[in-house]
Amino acid sequence: MYLLLILACWWLPTHSTNFSKHSITLKVTNLQSEKGTIRAVLCNDHNQWLSSSKYYVGKNCKVEGQAACELTFTNIPSGTYAISLYHDENDNGALDLGAFRIPEEPYGFSNNPSSMFGPPSFEEASFQLQNHLTLTIKL
Image 1 (cartoon, rainbow, N blue to C red):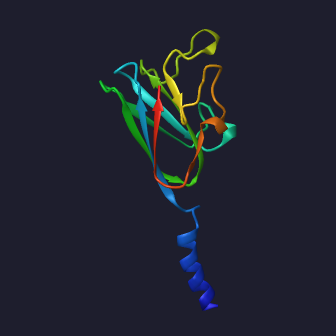
Image 2 (image 1 turned 180 degrees about the horizontal axis):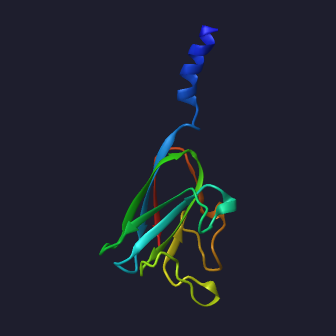
Image 3 (image 1 turned 180 degrees about the vertical axis):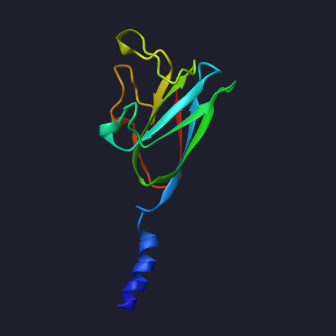
């Protein structure tokens, strides 16, 4: 019995990735304006992908004269995630939409998929997080 307990204490911390926490460093490049805020959300559920209120965690980065912006999601468990973001150039807290609900502010997604004919699916933007990760999204 004690042998099983000792083996379990050794095996769980070294073999289970469900308890591992990681960070994702996100570099946002090709900013078209040096004002406003980058608003990014990390999503771990395809049913909540691109929802304005249902996401895993959100982060903001003030641009203030920068040509690029960097932010970090911390304490994130291993799993499948996707990131969507936009550059809120006028700092009104919303993605401004024009005719036909086409965004008027720059936006981007993890994996930098083409969004010419609409937003990418969760699967197109998703990535596996198993270790600390650095991603670059080009607006």
